[in-house]
Every structure is written in C-alpha cells, then in structure tokens.
Image (tube, rainbow, N blue to C red):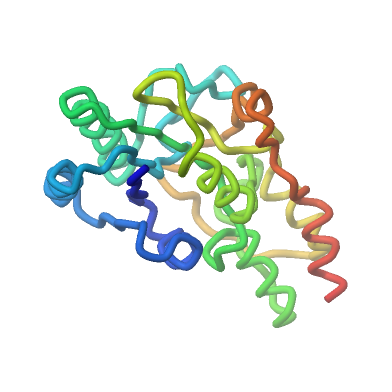
Length: 228
C-alpha cells in the first residue's frame, strides 16, 4: 500500500519527519493543501494520514470531546487545519483513497510543549511562566504514543474510506497541577492568550477499543525526568 502523512502541526515537524523518513509532507500554508492532494492523486497514493488538532473542538461545555463533535475553531490556524480535513475528505471521496484524520491532544516530548519548557526551567533553576490563571486544563500525550498510533495506521485496514480518531489519555491536567508535579515553589505570571481554550479532554473510547491506549503516564514521566 502506498501511503503518505500530511502534517499541519509545525511543532511536530522534526519529530515525525525523523520517525517517518520520506513519508511526511509538512504544510505551512492552506493554499499548499490542494497542490499536495493533487500530487498524491497523480502518484496513486492509496492512503493519507492527516495530522490534525484537538483545538478544532474549541470551547466546549461537555467533556470528554468525542470525534463526532462539531468543530468550532477559535483561531485562524486551527480553522485552516479543519479546512484541510474537509479538503482531504472531499478528495478521498472523489478519488477513492483512504483518508485517516488523527487529532492528537497536547503533545509533549518535542521540545515545544509547556511540559518541555517547564523541564527546561527546572534544569536551569529558573521560574516558569504561567499564562492566565493556570486553571486551564490539557490532555497531555507523549509524542512516542502519537507516533505509535501513526505507525499502526500505515498499513492497518479500515472499514470505511475515512476515519477520525482522537489521540489522548482522557485525563485533564491543569497548568497549576504541573507546577506541583515539577515541585516549583513559585512562578512568573503572564497574560492569558486571547483564544486559549479553558479545558480539553479527549474521548478515548475508540483508541482504547483499537488497543492503542497510551503507554506513558504524565506523572511518572515528570518524576523520572526530575531524577535525571
């Protein structure tokens, strides 16, 4: 089976290109998507794995976020990612290739996440910065668990031509929880990002059913990192 991974998450570029050498197309501009899809059609690609984002769910009042929830992006970049999903689904129907949408939640272990930055602060013995109240929650998932799911879908048969799957743990952790886990005694206060969602939590029903439950526990990961 000829397959390709399309990534619209800049913070994941290095990690997944290293894991999937030659199989990744990283898109920075929305206009590049149609060009990419057309090239895939010409190359007779049979399956596209599209790396989307949990941010599509927007500011929900019901948790956990299920794959069937209507997207409600709060910012332009997230809206573009959603358009990428829609374009891919359209091209998949027209050209009969399989289109798999993966929506990872808050990924750490790439050097770009709040957890990576807090660990860097700890190593340098400086105070971290908390933006807003710190009560906002995230569903943190290790990059290795995300890559495991991506590898699974390179060849695994699917029942329909398209599939949407959350990649998360189903556990909400606040930024203040992280302050405690990292054992910081204090922190710098920063202004809350305007379009930052207050809560996020993945529905893991599908990922557990497929026996792809995440292996890395956040608290254990931080504890081991602090010992090092």
